[in-house]
Length: 350
Ligand code: UFG
Image (tube, rainbow, N blue to C red):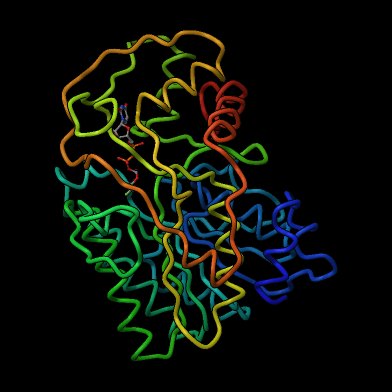
């Protein structure tokens, strides 16, 4: 279906069968990290679109029960080349979607070695196996952290990359690897640079340990009432002194992957994924109070190292080229996350 046509059906459609009327997908795809937060929602959308899905996950941060049937879960690591060869040689995979990786910025500052090992060195093993087994397409979860402190907002894909943490460095390095593998093997890749992902979809939500992200952190503080929620700094050069971020619903984000995969044919693609709207931490907090229906206690704490004052995406490129339109608001994200946290107060069972 051409991009214009997808754009026509998008605004009204919420589920995949409505988005691709009569056009079910049939290929087989491998999702690395498919037991994690974003990977599990991606797996669900791929299944709904008609793909056959194999998930590889070492379950260090993922959850077995987050893998939706009939996706097949292979318990293992992307650094295990024999396992990857075994999976990729038995059936014909048309695409690998790579979500597996470590994602906590402050942790990457204290333990850069495990970030380089997991996000880069094991990524090389994955790319070698992908190319050896002639999988033609690769979709990579990158991050706004590759830009570092932006010189201007909204940030476009052409803006310079100056990561300010080992985490951002590892994502940038992997982007470079993709370019090199594309030159060496003809691999087609799509790099998707995520801004702040939130929300839940179809019973799949965010269960990190420890939880460092803003929206689940606020909601968990309401449910568990252990300690006051901390806002990291209110002296930034923004309208209320707290940091501004661009939040995107996990459903909208994963939907963009489906469009990108379909569009990945003759050339490589790079897109930002954000909603192009900035909210301060205090505005997110107020939205959470509205959704939860009560005042939420908080205190102002010191700035968190590595936080930049403002990050807002330009997603104009993917809108123009693929007809993508985010459908969900910040309130939708908080409401969906709240529903998930209430039904999973202690996260996934396994
Ligand atoms: N924040 C608090 N208190 C908390 C948690 C967060 O005040 O308990 C603040 C942070 O200081 C920041 C904002 O809320 O200003 C958002 O913080 P998150 O941890 O939710 O998200 P980040 O913007 O730090 O990082 C996220 C992803 C990264 C990605 C980045 C890109 O975690 O992987 O978005 O924008 F690189």
